[in-house]
Image (cartoon, rainbow over all chains, first blue to last red):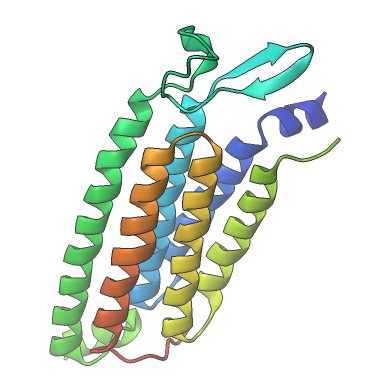
Length: 131
Length: 81
């Protein structure tokens, strides 16, 4: 029973693992660039969650099949149950562009911090701020 | 049972994410993050969302990697943890 819950929904378990890895990178790492890398991992895990939520499964001749690419195929017909849901794809398309812009702003802040304190280590920066 | 190909891609994703966070050399970390984004694009293509897949491959694996390498040119390459 528990094994079946894992084998049917393993993508969600892996997505949660990636979210935890990203959160660990943001909270547990001292280097500021490592924190940024953790943030990128976290964002990508959220994208994966949405894309997995858009997939559809259908049963044909007893086997479980995944829905097709959301472009109408004359052989498949116009039944919407055979195609994946395209709405989350459009949302995530926007979110990817926003995430690249966020990374650019974060890197600009990082360069300014490095110019002021000559370090990217959180502890060293806090010590130099106190002086 | 036979695992789907997305299971193996997800295992590779988790390994690259952990190694990118744990490695001391920041340039290697950025290179591993680019590989992570590329495997994520492959996973999106396998899940049937091709438009998201090529946007992720161009922006996530391409532009973000170039940004990070250019920023690393002005920063120090070693990391304490």
